[in-house]
Length: 326
Image (cartoon, rainbow, N blue to C red):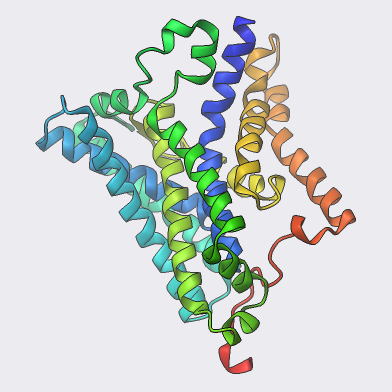
C-alpha cells in the first residue's frame, strides 16, 4: 500500500505541469486558436518565475514565504502573457499561419529560457544550473497537518500550493465553459466566428483574451515544474517533452478541463511507471515514456470514429478569421 501511495503521489507531481499546459491550451483552442507555442510559453513561464525568485532572494526578505511564492507567480504570469501577446498579434491581427507561429514561439521560448538560465548560472557561479533554495522550499511546503492522516495525508494533502491551484483552475475553467455566457460565447467564436460576429460577439477580443489567459495558465505549468517539482532549480533543457505532453493531454481529455485532472494523473503515472518496475534497461524505460502518446493516438482514433461533436475540436480551430469574408 505504501508503494502504491508513493506511485500515486509521483503521478500527481508529474502530471500537474501537464494539467496547467493542457487547460491553458484548451481555453486557447476554444477560441479557435491552435497554439503550438505552449511548450515555449511554459519555458518562459518557468524562467520568468526563476528570475522573480532570484531578485526576491537577492534584494528581498527570504524569510517571508508568502512573497517567495507571490513574486515568482507574478513574474511567471507577466512573462507568459507577453509571449502569448506575440502569438496573438501575429495570428489574430496579422493573420499569420498558426501552426508555423506556434512552432516558432516554442523555439523562441526554449531559446529565451536557455539564454537567461545560462546567464544567471554564470552570475551565480553554479555551473549549468540555478538553484533557489528558499523559494523552492516555499513552493514545496505542504499542509502542516498532513502527517497526522497517515497514508491519506500523504496521498492527498502533501502537495504545495500550485498543485491545488491547478485543480481549482481546471474546475473553474470547466464551469465557465459549460455554464456561463462568456464560455458559451467563447465556444461560439471557436466553432463559427462569422456567426458569432454577426450575433454581436467581439471575435478579436475573445481570441486575444482567451489566448493570453490560456498562456498565463500554461506558463504556471513551467513554474510548477521548476519550483514545486524540482525545488527551485533551473537546468537548460531540463523540462523535456512535457510541453508536448500537455498538448497531447488536450486530445486525451476531449477539450474538457475537468477531465484533464484525471488525464494528467494518468499521463503522469504512465510517464514515471518505469521507475517502479525493477530491472528495466534504458531502452525499455524510453518505451514506457511513449505510453502517453500511444494512449493519445488511441483516444484520437476512437473519437474520430464515433464522431460525437462534443468530443471533437472546435470547427474553426487553426483557421484565421477574415471579417470581410463574412
